Image (cartoon, rainbow, N blue to C red; front, side, top):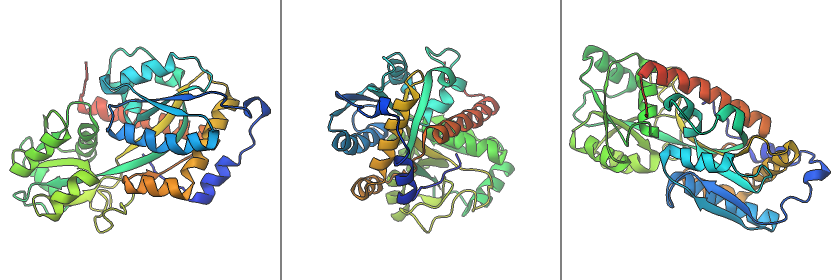
Amino acid sequence: MKRTIMHMTALAAIAATCIPAVAATFPERPVRMIAASAAGGGTDIIARLLAQPLTERWGQQVIVDNRPGGGGVIATDIAVKSVPDGYTLLLQSVGISYAPALYKKLPFDVQRDIAAVTIVGSQPFVLAVNPSVPAKSVVELVQLAKSKPGEIRFASGGVSGASHLGSELFRVTAGVNMVHVPYKGTGPGVTALLTGEVHMAIAGVGTMLPHAKSGKVRALAVTGAKRSPAAPDLPTVAENGLPGYAFDVWYGLFAPAKTPRATLNRISSDANAALGDPAAAKRFAAAGIDIIGGNVEESNKVLRAEMTKWARVIREAGIRAD
């Protein structure tokens, strides 16, 4: 994902977009924001961080409704089949962009049934290896993997999860043959890296950095398009020897595609204004989230581009979720 972190002035400009009178009174009752994760998950955290300033701005409660399961498919299905009036929104992760390529059958069509309201923010991951691995950089890791095809093992928190897809993107971009070892969650996957059961793994900055600082793993790079404020001394994977690679777990606000455009614009405008609020920005930063923002048109372009990218990665990696 080509990521541009927007300045507060840019977010304010989006928020200042003229909204037709038909949407001027929205909302007139509470709004439901479906979060595609259990309470405490990354998507849930983002949903609650956004719901608070929107509630204050609208004077109507934004209620977070957690609907975990199915890699986000359950939550997305509920959202797209709701009344398209702006009163049911969806907070989903990057998973919404690769679901069509992973599943043979979905109860909805992402391109036809879903509209992106704004891309809320993203969280970079850290690529790390066990200290026993001789590679001290991404270049050396790629060289090692090429010299030992099928011998380097990488952990993930489960098939089709973010850590799996990010690692497969690395494998495909580098053109190396590595073995995927899935675990039941990010924690067990990182534990496997600590013990040397696997050689490599990627996980969120907050999860991986403490282990890197203690010397239990060797952090090679952050996976995002830009360096992370949480680890400014770590280069990106692209900087460190693999141009073209960028992986951020991004989170977006979505609505049923048939929601009136004026209402979508109103929600997008207010969401961007909320993201541009200094107090809200501090809360996002504390959670390790880089704010992105963007209007309806820009956000849908991001979604389509991500769908194209992940369709290629999943096809070349031969990943299936069903």
